[in-house]
Image (cartoon, rainbow, N blue to C red; front, side, top):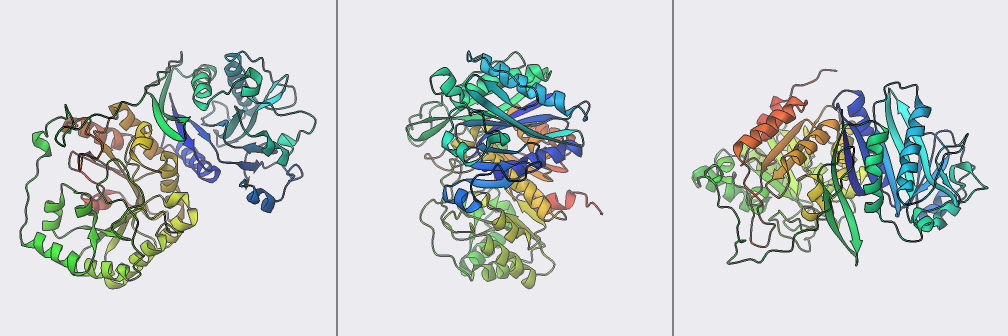
Length: 547
């Protein structure tokens, strides 16, 4: 059995909790045959367990909110605890051999932490009748778990260098006569998240008996207000950890990177600017609409437009993010056009589409990220063209559950949100995005409208490994995604991320076979594939489950 380890960076508690539930559900329902260890750092949050009565919470919810601290009542064991920056939090999603053996499981978690601390020269122990890990300066790690249907949730929190003032807002774990300790205080220097992660993973794999551990960690080294990623390719039970610095920016020569591979034959397309293409272009301009086909420089534009299909892009043509792969213009967005949904619906009607795809730029300047315009567009398409299935390719709405609910209340046939790349490359490629947030969004969408399909896409050829792509497919399957698209990255301009390599069609075939082999209902994988490519055919290929 493989243990898949994911360092997800700083992730709000609510999103991490839903992500746990997504992986838990995948393990329970058999979507995933692998165990997971999710590692995160949270913004300030206090969680109250199912056995607590709130008496150890020493501040009101309003007072906590005033200090920027969230409050969540959750289903784990234990009383009340704090999570925040400077704390390594781990959520194991494991199937136990004997689901009744919760106490031995907790003891193993404690042993992992004790062994990790020993590597820093810190003597630590467990105490009879209590959970967590203790030192001569106080409690340095808390544990609170839940086991349901034989699969674990929640986990541990190791204090590295958190702000201890937050612990004064609670009686941690209901204990009033013992202090809280930090690893940095115990060793007399600041211990970083990457140090602690490096130390903990091999102990976790050994204590729990995993012969193979697959990791995709994109840990963040903080320095001078900037973040940069380092990778852990593969970590076996013995423990190896090889961080690599990001390569220096290459020098452009005549708009082309030195050594950039020539375009192979399978990446060449034929321009077909016939009457259908010109008619569709005229329609879009006449309705003052944008298409992602044009804005993103899609290689399939001639094929799709000649067939009368296009992906409409709402909320303007200026994006508030600047992702390294994308050719959509970044800048100050225009005012929201409340009539745009009506024009989009008219375009869908005029084209006679039976399957319409609607996407947008990121609009982080809007309170709901543009969700209300998505919802209005779905409604107007349904009014103008009742027989048309609607697929929406949405941004992450910065993790806002209410914004997602606004879209899902309109019951789109397909909810598409792209993860774009593997976990290790997220911070380099997806500005302001988060891999864990994207997975959480996809699972939330399925919970909000179970009758619909969820879909996501990956771009390859940006520096990922084949193993990392397979790992991403396993993650998407675990959270229940129905359709995945995989295509070749094409560098839009010399200012964008260089092409690392052109992926051979045989490799795309392996991705399709692996994805569908682990249970993803449909994988559209090929050099020229994009998110909306063969969207109607992909959706129709997924078997309908009658409940």
